[in-house]
Length: 363
Ligand code: ATP
Ligand code: MG
Image (cartoon, rainbow, N blue to C red; front, side):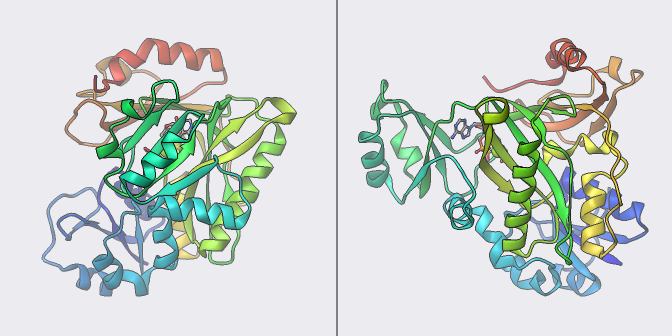
C-alpha cells in the first residue's frame, strides 16, 4: 500500500521504517513547510500535499497537532475521524472525554482567562498544576501552585494567557503508560504497562518488564485503552499515560494524558519485542492482522536529551543506540538507548552511570 505520514520527525521516520518492513511505499510530510519527502530523506519531492494525498491509500500521523488545512486535504484518507482525534489536542476536551467515559483522571477544572484562573487559585487549599489547554509538551506550558506560596508566586500573565485546566497535584506512587494499537475491527493489541521516570517534566527513561505491577492495573489500563479507542473510532497505535496512586492491591490508575500516536514510552519495543509499536501502527492502518502474541523482554529505554552525540563507549557495548539526526540543545530529545536487562538494580546502575553522558537539561 501507499502510506503518507504527516510529520517527518523521528517518529515519522520510525513509522517509515516499519512501513518498509512490511513492503509498503511511504512518503512523509514536513507539516511546517508542507514539503513531501521519502523516508530517511530530507530532500523534498516536487509534489504538493494534495498530490501526495491522492497518491496515498492511507494517511496517518506522527503527531496530533494537525493543522485544520492539512486535515481538510487529507481527511478522506484517514482511518480515524479527524474531529474525534482533534479532541485530544485540547486538554479540556481530553479530560471531558475521560469524564464522559467514567475513566478516572486527576480532579480538574477549566479556566478561560486570567481572571477565571485567579478565582480558582485564590480559593484553593491544595497544590495544583496549571496546564495550557493546547500546545504543551515535555512539561512546557505548565505552572505549579501551592497555597503556601500563593497566587503571587505564579506567573499569571503567562499561565492565564490562554485557556487551560487546573489539576490537583497528585502524590503518585509512580507514573506508567500503556501503549498498544487498535484495528478497524476494534481488536486491540497492548504491551504490558511500563514505568516512566521524568526529569523536569521530560521523559528520562522507561522501565519495561522491570516493575512488579499487580494484575488488576494491567486490566484497568487495557479496559481504559479499549474504551478510549472505541470512543474515538481510533485505528493505529495510541498511548495513555497514568499516575499510579496507592500501593499493591489498593493501587489504581488515574489518566494523565492520551497521545493518539506512537509514543516515546513505547520506544523500548524496538529492541525488547518481536513486534514494535511502529509495526503495530502500520499493521493496524494497513488492515494486517496483529501478531497472535508479542514476545517481550525486560528492557530499559533511556532518552538521549540535549547530548551532542551517542557517547562513543556505548557503540561497542550491548546497548542499542538510536540517533535522530537532530541538532542538540539542552532539554531536546535527540535519541534513545535501549538496553536489555533482567534486573532492575542493573537498570538503575546503567542510569546512574550513563545519565551524565546522555542527558543535558536546561538550567
Ligand atoms: P508529554 O511530553 O508527555 O506530552 P506534557 O508536557 O504534555 O508531557 P504532562 O504529561 O501532563 O505534560 O506532564 C508532564 C509531567 O509533569 C508528568 O509526567 C508528571 O511527572 C508531572 N505532572 C503533570 N501533571 C501532574 C499532576 N497533576 N500531579 C503531579 N505531577 C504532574
Ligand atoms: Mg506526559
